[in-house]
Length: 40
Image 1: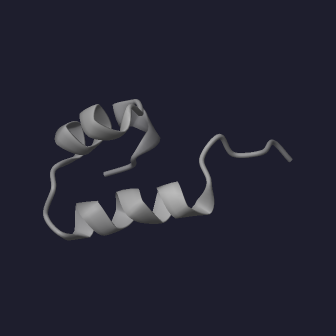
Image 2 (image 1 turned 135 degrees about the vertical axis):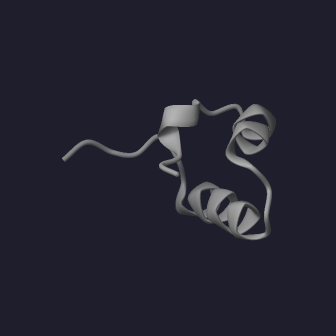
Image 3 (image 1 turned 180 degrees about the vertical axis):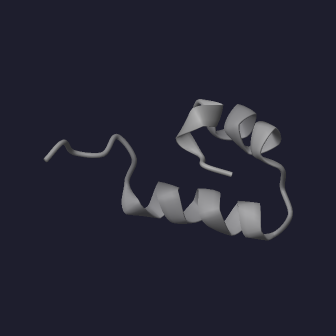
């Protein structure tokens, strides 16, 4: 199985910020990830 590029902490941070109402394009820009990384 392929290892993830993201640590568990980074993944949780993305999910928590998304739950708080931050939109996906803004989050991806801030965190430097591709929009397709976050399934919305």
